[in-house]
Image (cartoon, rainbow over all chains, first blue to last red; front, side, top):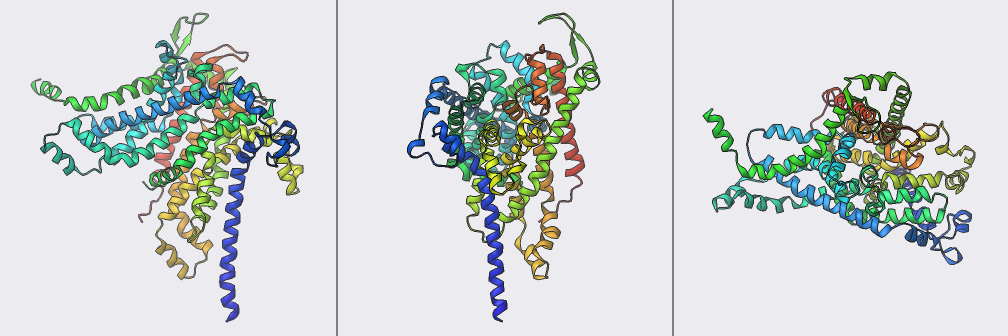
Length: 283
Length: 313
């Protein structure tokens, strides 16, 4: 009797302990490299190599890396470029995408089906495959080495999936609501303004998902806007580390500066992001 | 005639206003450039120098890419690396992602949200930044990974993996696995949670062990997710360019051991690094990648998604 009563909880406890051990080990492997880079970016050269796992306290604290990064590269400018490119593209995608999705979901007209399929094609095929054509086109318009070239490409890239998701959601909005507005004399543009606030929660989630790949992209900044004055954080960090590869303090400082924005963003929006991920997977 | 006229004149203006911006931007900046790239791959430069004459060449460029010097060696090498990159990532990421998802889906697990949030952190970072972090970890000068292996008394296994021809590609694929492990984990977790607990409980009451319950009940139900993970990893691995370019340079060091279609395209189209720019062959490589992506997507849609048994829950 006693034996059975004991073995039950102990076994459950052992399983639970093993679960936590595995998950904690996975978290350690995930976080340790990132934490180590951040910690060591605040250290002197000797302690980076001599005592890599120690905290930057006392004599080992040293900001030389940051001084070099801020004098030799224009990180504040890169940051501004990334913020402008990411936010302007996201606003354009959401605005233009919502308009198209509303029309595709609300009205029956010729080519409706065809347009849905046409936009959906862009979900599976990467815009990078058109790089040759994009470089030609944008240099023809004199847009190379401007942030507007990036805004244009990212807007086009984000539209297919955004339209697809928004069309699905806008179809679920009750028709009575829109009919009531029309009876009250609203025109079609006013009906759209009425619908827009109803999809606001999903717009926030889509926005979070759109911003991450735009901020993190290396390819288009590299081939469309490599000039110093229009560099994004991702390209700027890559170029800086390329030319200061042997200066460990500078490399660690540059990496830390590049790590901070996504981590702050994630800290603020992780709940929306993970919820969106699960919602999308159920569909 | 009259009806056609009526139909066009009645096409409501507001629909045009709503759709035109998206249609124009998507067509001009995405569809047209891809079509133009594919078209350019069918032409060959005939004049010397830039801006010279071109002549229609049919599929000659493609034939040269797969069968003639100097292209064929590089093309097949790059394609092989793309496939290997995908396979390594897929084969390592799936069991690990599934294991973590199963652990996270245990009823009554404490700290579940915290674990989940932490494990998804690397997926937020730029591929370039995550790559550089691991380049430092694996650097023998700093010796972080070596020191960590020493703790486990297996420090002797350490080699400068990113610098060796035999292991550089594997190291890159594993860095990518580290970064994106959270993706399959979250997808599996979602489908595991979606399984009604009565089904699992019923099996347990009937005397099935946790192990049997998982393989006989839960695993068949989450099988469709394996297909989704596969297609996402596949299309993602064709973008391996960012990681290779940042860590190994456009020449895909050491000795092209990490060359992928993206880096081959970059060198060919933009030139430099000792070779002249060749836009036509660059477009051909892009066109070939297009065909390969499309083939993979079709295999998934027809071969997997249609045949996979989807159980209605």
